[in-house]
Amino acid sequence: MFTNPAINIYTHDVRILVAFYEGLGFKEAFRFPSDGEPIHVELRLDHFTIGVASVDSAITHHGLKPKLDGRPIEIVLWTDDTDADFARLTVEGVPGLSQPHDWLDGKLRIAWIADPDGNPIQLVQKRQ
Image (cartoon, rainbow, N blue to C red; front, top):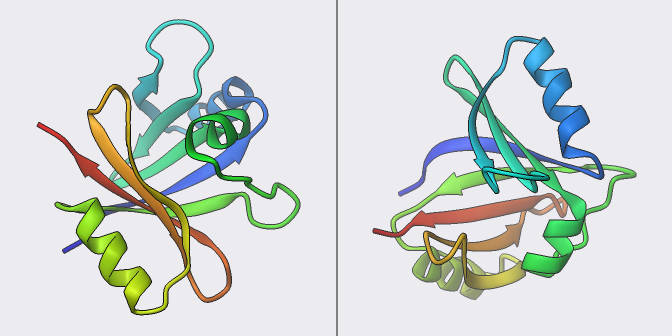
């Protein structure tokens, strides 16, 4: 079962995009790393979350190659079991973009699939 959908926007300059959305009333809810140059920041407005993610981090940490010339966004679906959902969906014919792997020192288990138009969808599991 999926919960808490969000959208990630890829950018070459996380700080500039974060400042823009903060100017629209979004409040910072999460930043990684907490000190120094951020590679991922989550911003909330009411019950909507926008993640601002570094293109370089997507390439280096996850093996993704976000295209900024068309659709630099993705849908994020939180799940109880990233591995099982990734396996089920790819067996059903959904394209897998990045195999399940640990991130943030093992705090999250993440993977990517694609919708029929090629838009990336991130599957995320919080680890205890």
